[in-house]
Length: 122
Image (cartoon, rainbow, N blue to C red; front, side):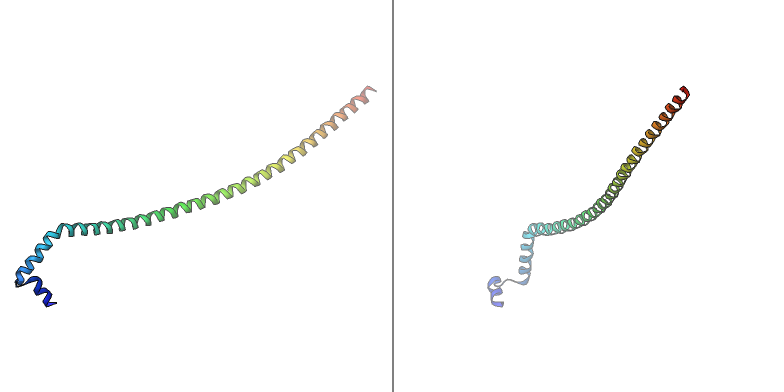
């Protein structure tokens, strides 16, 4: 390793080596800064995307809960509607039966009236 460093640096003094390293860093600084910024931007993007995913997950959970609630309400309303239709059918049948009874009573009253009117004539 020493042989390689000696071959590369020759008889250069340590101050020249440090100055060369600093010069190389200064020349590479824009590239280093850009890469550091990209790393920082990538971390910021990753953090923001994680926060957005979490928030979207929470919103999705809330919306799914709303959908579940609405579905349950719709099922309950549907069940009530069916029972009301059945009840309505029963009430219609009762009304029809009552109409028949009323008609029969009216017929009976009319026949009794006719019979009474017929007796008066005799």
